[in-house]
Image (cartoon, rainbow over all chains, first blue to last red; front, side, top):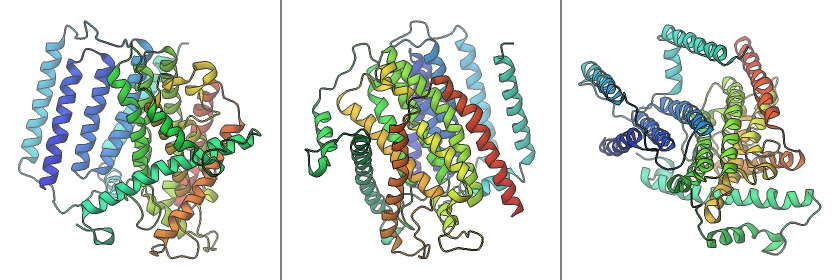
Length: 164
Length: 342
């Protein structure tokens, strides 16, 4: 377990550093690229938690699709090279407060629920088949709810994008 | 923790890393020489390289040495750090693809449970490097090339993944070894001698996969992102020397990896008819058979590249969204029905 702990420390340090860099950088494309580093660090931590499928999904969806769309949009509109003098919005204290509150609630909920639990250390990997079995049996209702939500978002996007 | 040959985990990993670091550049050189130099030359009634080595076979090595000697130039207005990182991101995406490619019962770097899904995920990372290169070059042609590449790769990643779904449904697994096993142990109407290569049952999937791969590799007729006549050279117009070499290597190595994926999913992979699936001798013969099949698939990719003219940007997008995606969805539905009924 020592190797995993060391790896977690390194990955977590990189992720946190990238996250801080992302909110303080003066270049919008740099901010987006640092966000990629944060999401990649999270994917690496999922691998350490033996959740291979989640890690792969994180890379495919967030880095491969969402971030590419972000960058695409930024570069298509306005993305000068170099420092932008005014990158921070006037409402940044509110944003910082709500981020702190969300982080606090999440940490409290996790410690409250899983505080003393630990992962099995016998190198088990959660197989993708097990993930899909539980999604399509035990968690079928949340899964369907999320599907409908995504469908609604999709239709909404089409309606907004239509000109006529 | 011991694995192959009873070696310790770190020793096994070191050996695998060494083999991968030899195989990937060799694969890139082989495809580059055979198809980009010689085949293109013959198709255009030229001789191609003839001087360096027998039949000019060492030409690309000479080219690589030339690239390494060149001055490392950054455009004055470029964003230096992003400019330098971009080719590394593209190359890393292509190297990561090789991690899951199986070439024998035990001859695979890491037999990941999510196999093909992982391959799709890491192959999508290259877009990031392309966008970084296009933006950081501070050149409008490079930026346009990067944006075109991103639009194209987003559009063609969907049919690529959806085409793979048919194979996954039929093989019952995302794992590439299990996909090979499903083909080796399959039967064609009770005739099991050659197994059941999925190209027979998933022919539409194979077609969609090859077309989308062609677009993902930005090969003609989908080469708008690097169209010389419109964009000078696209996203890598400002790159020289070894950074350009990295882009070139990544392009050819990715072509090799995609050919290998097509081989594994549709042509039966490394399995040879008549052998047991786990026969140890296949660790030696498997890579040879696999290479032969890869070269056939890569031949098709480059054959199309040298034959067809470039599509227009709107034709390309229409083709992806209005033809390929509905077709691949229909393919999934039909495969699913057969899976349940049979």
